[in-house]
Length: 413
Ligand SMILES: Cc1cc2nc3c(=O)[nH]c(=O)nc-3n(C[C@H](O)[C@H](O)[C@H](O)COP(=O)(O)OP(=O)(O)OC[C@H]3O[C@@H](n4cnc5c(N)ncnc54)[C@H](O)[C@@H]3O)c2cc1C
Image 1 (cartoon, rainbow, N blue to C red):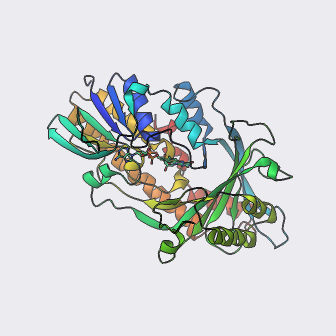
Image 2 (image 1 turned 60 degrees about the horizontal axis):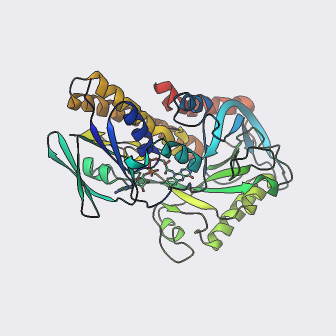
Image 3 (image 1 turned 135 degrees about the vertical axis):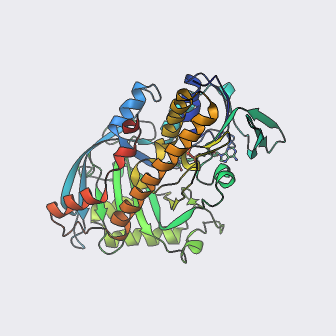
């Protein structure tokens, strides 16, 4: 059992706040350094997570009992049969139990559990080094430096920490993007195809697929008519096309994402036309009516160690995995929870960190393998739900997804 540690956390997003909450509760002193100056806002995207995970988070008082969310209990696999096809053909329907919500609500819930005195906004960390075997120094852009017993780098997918710990672990672009949007429910006459469902749609003539579900309205309302359609279309964009695709409305070349409202209108319209040609009319209309759509590039990165000396990687700062594995949003939470257990089980901090790093590295390899498997099924060799039988679709799902939930928070407890 380790004594109380003085812990510095770099990054105050999902992983950083999760770690701060858990480390405090385990009796450690915590300081979070977040380079953004204000509240972190969701980029407009909803999140679906297994209800079992959601309930565990409520039980552990990580999120509020009245956390606004919608429920999806069916996942229909829908194909586009003909150009005048309104709702498409459902090949098969998988029973699911998912909670759907906004990224921003999750961040707000986590952030309010970290005392203001322990969360430093507008503090950009520029370097991390070992001072001696027990002390880590964080260097900040403002010239200050801070000493800690342990530093957790939760600084996201372009992590400074990952570059320092494992310079070989480069981000690899996967050849497709996630194009996303939110549309008020009242924009459509009929909501039944999405009511308590999370349909996955194959395209008529394109790799990838689209997924759609309701999330609460911007005010948190889950009342019928007040929710938002949250859709996400996986669309191939080749390495050659990417530089042009990432030029925004102001002519700036973006890296990593095109935030809401920044995608060029000619590109947005082209993608909407692509969806009109590839989706049943109902779903194409939802996409067509959505404004301020945005894009995230899909990357992976594999790290070969999660800790070196007293420096650890958490969340997207560690390995980066394709989004299908549902592991992304609570990855940092799992990393932090395991770290506390490892520190508790070992007499020395260094032994605890070595054990923890080995477990996290092994687990991240498993998740990456799963991500690759799902990527093949969902992007590069998708099944055509317009023609596939129920048995074929069920067998395809079984063999493609062995399964994401086994890596989520609950099952790892
Ligand atoms: C503002 C924001 C909005 C997002 N919105 C959505 C959404 O709507 N839907 C969705 O599915 N996913 C969203 N994400 C997704 C996200 O990419 C991941 O799925 C998830 O948040 C991973 O959490 P993380 O804490 O590991 O990394 P991140 O969320 O990427 O957080 C990293 C944090 O570290 C901070 N940071 C980085 N470098 C430094 C440094 N040198 N010094 C100090 N601080 C540093 C960053 O400002 C950031 O707050 C969002 C992420 C962010 C940061």
